Image 1 (cartoon, one colour):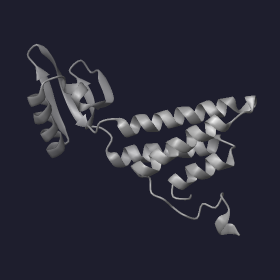
Image 2 (cartoon, helix red, strand yellow):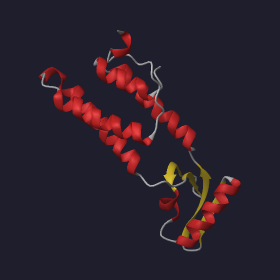
Image 3 (cartoon, rainbow, N blue to C red):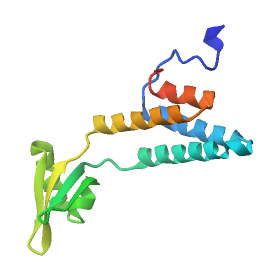
Length: 156
């Protein structure tokens, strides 16, 4: 019966923290179960994907900014804490300004002047994560792994 088939992807779970945690465990479990030497690269990729998910899940939530310096130098998608440094007052002031206006200026005096703009928002980050999962689906031939990854994308 199709409902009992382990490859049936009719359920469409959302991309939640719990789903990502469960995927991490399944990826490691599948990788540990691979004994074929020819598939070792795929097992390594599965472990790396699990590590990437764990890293993303454990990363502290912070605003990400694009930085432009007075000399024209630029950096994209930098955590605000890194951009501002160890000044809690400057961090909070810049954070509030970014949330209100989408940009702020920090530094000056003995510190380099930096112009900050909000970087990727959570929807864009989620879109990038979904695109990465789709690339993983496209690059694997393991049907179990493909189906598990498809479940995360809502059964597509």
